[in-house]
Length: 320
Image 1 (tube, rainbow, N blue to C red):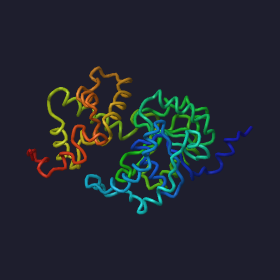
Image 2: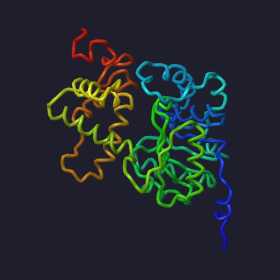
Image 3: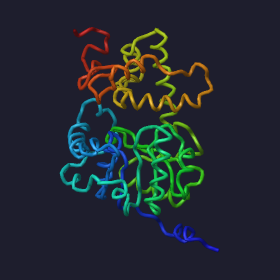
Image 4: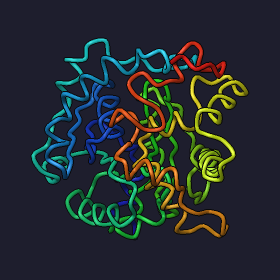
């Protein structure tokens, strides 16, 4: 006997309205990216302070972030909306989680990188949004670990966006092992309509593609400093010279946020088999000092004008 879902799979699913859960940096950028495509977006955060500031921060970031010199190195970039105010009209700060997801075709979770937090949220999303495609923006937790919280795991997958979205216009899609083909197809079409390059991860890969490779770089960068072989400046300086990039591993960690880096590292360490895979001392020191990178004005570098932007810094000359 054919099921309701059998019938639905014969009709291509379309995504016209979206809900973004989490009003942090990544959630805000996802929201404005979707709004820039002409779609309506509702954004919600469990922290009232984050939600209250979301629209102001979205407007500020959209106007300024894409134009900073250090984000201009990619040949393939997205163009931010020319009319920020018009894009902002499509973004609504929802009064509740229920209001955010009501009637949404897709719900994108962008909360902290913690499995228990995500499981609790998706249990609620599964109940409050029984028809929508549900996705997680997790950067390290395989979607198969979150899928058990969803009553219908066939409509659940991972959509891993990258910040800043304008200069990293890509997304990794990874099913949970139960994700239906029509759902994967719909999300792939949706992502491409946003101007993103789409990579579909085959099978279950912790860290997906980029973050699996990036994690190895990040881990060894932290270890070489923890073991006293170098300081962050020299690691970044050599990296930038060797690969011709505008920033190095520690500069990237500052951009991501050192609290986020720590959460991701912890998720890897919970399943690590290498005895040397231990928490980083220098990262712990930064967290204890409240130095989280760009978001607090201080991390491995000072912000908003990090030292590596200086004309003499790359040559190893002290500008002071």
